[in-house]
Length: 123
Image (cartoon, rainbow, N blue to C red; front, side, top):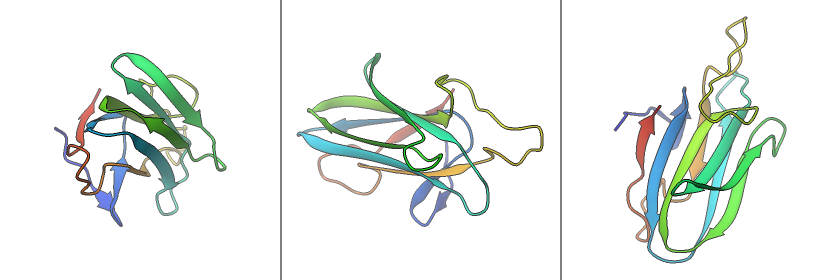
């Protein structure tokens, strides 16, 4: 388990990170990324059921990512990283300005009786 900073109730993502959770009933899952302050970012999200990729999103609103999908009961993993369809890669630019961090919010992050507390790991 990796400790995570929070900004206004959102997680701060600074490297490829997995969030594991379980839904006990059908759930409309949503995950949204936000630019963190004045730090520009180009995040990408991947949602898995086991090893099966269900959906990925890059650049939904500007450079920020968004996923919305109805999930059946089960165990899932959300991978938060940076753009360009390589989930294990964290991209920064030479100036050290892009992708220092971004904010993440998703269904199950707050207290919700149908989910387990999300567990985060980094790779």
